[in-house]
Image (spheres, rainbow, N blue to C red):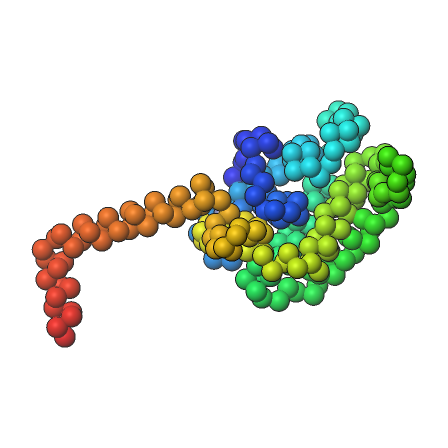
Length: 232
Ligand SMILES: [Zn+2]
C-alpha cells in the first residue's frame, strides 16, 4: 500500500454522489488493475473525518462539535477505520459491477441493507426552521460517530441504487483507475473520471504509442519484415 501524503481537501470529488466519492478514496483494487499496490487515501480515522467535511458528509458545525473527540482522544481508532474501509469495499463490490451493467452480488447488497437499517436508527425527526425535517442524534464516542457516518453513506447508497440516476453510473475507462461516477454530461459520452487527469494521461500514452509505431516504420528492416508477412 502506498502512503498518501496529500491533504483530505486535495482528494477530487468527481463522483456526483457522496457515496461514489467515498468509493473513490482508494485505487488499485479493480480486477486486472496494472497498479501493483493499493493507493489508500484513508490512512487514519482523523483523515476520514477531515474527508467527511471536505465531501460534505458532515457539516462544519458537526466537525466543530466532534473535533476534540476525534483529534484529542488517546484511544486507537483503528477498529473504526477498519469498519469504514470494509464498508467502502462492500459499496465498491456493488457499484463497480453495476457500472459495467453487471449484476451486483446479493451478499454485498445485504450488507448495505444492514448498515442502512442501523443508520436509520441515527435519524430523528425534528422541527428545523419551523418545519419537520430529518436531523441526526448526537454521538458521544467514536464508535457512535463511525456507525452514524456509515449509516449516512448507506442511506445515500440505497437511494442511489433504486433511483433512475443509476443508469448514469460509469467507471473510468483508464485501466489503472478504479473511480466510479455518474455521467450527467449532455451527450453521456464521459469516459474518464476527469478529462484533465485520466483523459490527458490516456491521450498522452496513445500519442507515445503512435510515435513508437512511427519509429518502427521508419526503420527499413522492420518495413521489409512487415512486407514479407503481408505477402505470405
Ligand atoms: Zn480515472
